[in-house]
Length: 248
Image 1 (spheres, rainbow, N blue to C red):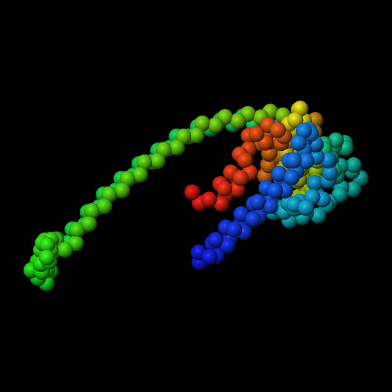
Image 2: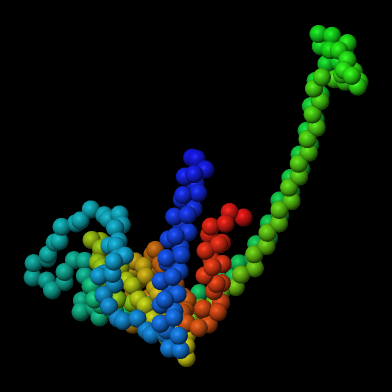
């Protein structure tokens, strides 16, 4: 790849970043002195980035019925189940995250190499003299030494305890439910957002129509915020652009 192509790509990325930052700056200027607004409640399946979930499914089994019996094979209960079981139903997700991780890694590497040809007179090399001094006794001698010392330490503690209601957005062929829930809380000029999504097995839903987060497959949890405090914690837009473009 030529240097001209690399420079052209860097310029293109810079232009895109500047345009995005400009749009973001305009949106922020519109909200100067105003409280951050809550997003509207809408159907997540109609969003531009929504994609239906596709998972491996077992072979469908034909339904069988017993004559003169009120019981249907495959039913979870004799009476009607009040838990979420179809698209549009709501269930409560119990988010209880208490994660603590500590890691300490250290790597040391030292390498010393010495190469000596031990050839002192190859085809009369020692008889060849220069204006300063004769050639050395050994025709090829190399010495090399390298060392690396890397250390890393991680000490992380995360704790999040809350409940969020989620909506069933899709029902997979094997009966599992795809859920997605979003919760927004506004305090003064800051909005806190909690998003939960994943795949739920109906049998894991408790009798009170709640489910614990560890029982959700492909769980996605996002907890963050937007507002004045978040804006102050973010680096300036110019610095963000330079961090992306500069190679050092």
